[in-house]
Amino acid sequence: MAETTFILRPRARLCGARADLYSDEGMRFAGHPTIGTSFVLLDEGILPRNTGAFLLEENIGPVPVRVEAGARPMLWLTTPPIETGRCYDPVLCANVLGLSTDDLLDAAPQRLSAGNPTIYVALRDKLAWTVRGST
Image (cartoon, rainbow, N blue to C red):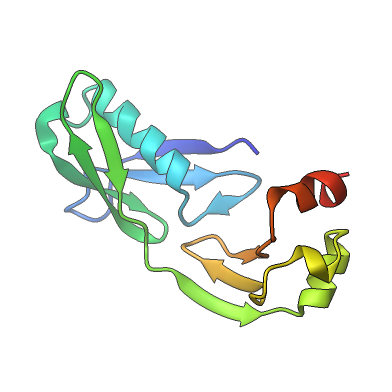
């Protein structure tokens, strides 16, 4: 899935820039585009390389980004708080994914979100998905 970022002037005065993130539709937050956008902001000199840390404004709010200086700087972000949502029936989830309930761990499938809601289904091992679920 392709993700696109538009870099805009921040509305929040403490943020270095605003990142408007899109995939098929607008996204409130996504980690990979946040790191990629931060790299471009530093590489293009929009933000100073020796900044140490900055806030990148996204639709979920300010996202802290820490910069470890060096020839190839490392970028670290702090994700927004994880919101827990409802749990789902393991039998239903296994059926939808083309798996058996034996393929699932004993953890209820659950909706979690750090800005983009996702249903997580814990599998016993990668082989279950490779052999049955992804075909």
